[in-house]
Image (cartoon, rainbow, N blue to C red; front, side, top):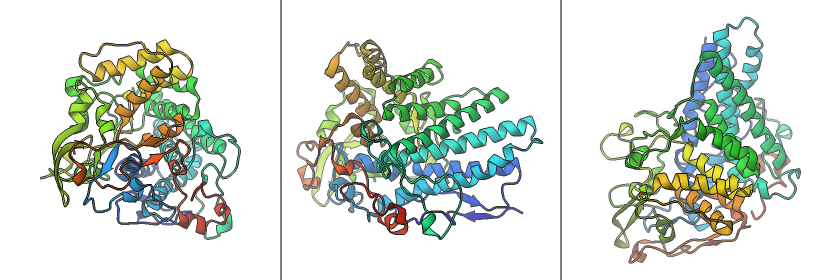
Length: 501
């Protein structure tokens, strides 16, 4: 008989928790559970459910609030202020919760993969069941790679700019089997950057093979708005990882391949708002399944909590990045009175996550279905990778394609040199704003920032401290600290804390 242990049972690491909804939802099954192919399907669906949490809420927005796009509003309840102020440290609760959330999923994927390897060797598996197993194993490998890559984005430096890729202690603690133990001498040390990314690539390449085998066997063609991991979703993550590694040729090929399928056309300008309001749009490669009961965390409450309150509002520089004819401007920015204890000021709020009415009743809970991969990112990867390969005509081509889609009456331009690079960076900044990419982008580009000005006549509602916070390109806070409880629990990483903490 199946036994299901709700939430997180015995895992390798000791994870802290806090009041925020950061612990992934889902289930973990015991040794007797994974007996039939249906069991593997149920387990995989449980991991899909856990992915709702790590693709929404503070897993997405904390790094953006840390940087240059948003100002804190007086009366925000001190929510996320350690990140806004740049004063977070190894004991900060959100750091521990996010680190633990990713590793919780990794633990479950290890449990699954340990069992699945033996199941796939069963010569009595029917063709149909072998195809199903390929699908489930491919998805779970993808989830492990996604979590390790997300950890590396936040807790490691830039792969592209690491001087010694083989130096131990610069990558992640890699746990690849399910082997819970109280013996802390067996806990893994932090690996090198090369080993960390080699593992991510290994999982993704295996996932691609598995899922392509399933798609081929079952005559399945990936389609937009898929709630399931497809071969195109795997390629999209491979393209993202390759760009961050400086593997520009591979990043370009993968991004172009997705674009050229024609399966994910950029949404028409008049339908752009629905991509965010009703979570309906052709350019979504993987959209995380959600419904009224199960929908992960609210990503939008960082920017809007009701008709007149916000915790964080966009800076002037953020606002001025957009042309008035840009469909993103009309979809994502709303001028409204913002009120708090300091008074009221008319200013713009960032409304990329307005809340999907399918996921709430009454007032919006500012929850939308997460969209971890969109074809818009592939156009941006193709443009940046082309520039890095000294193919400026190609870079202009992809840059103009996405700008032409987003901006009404846009007339393409041909840029060169640093001007072209700056516009590629600005366009990526516009398109991916509020989706958690800014920290890895700044590290990859070797850029710092100075937080910009506030909207006119709004000083009375903006927190005065740190509103012009500055980070140099090598600021240690662009790499988050390993949680203190991990340092305390694991003797192998006691001397491997990130620099500056």
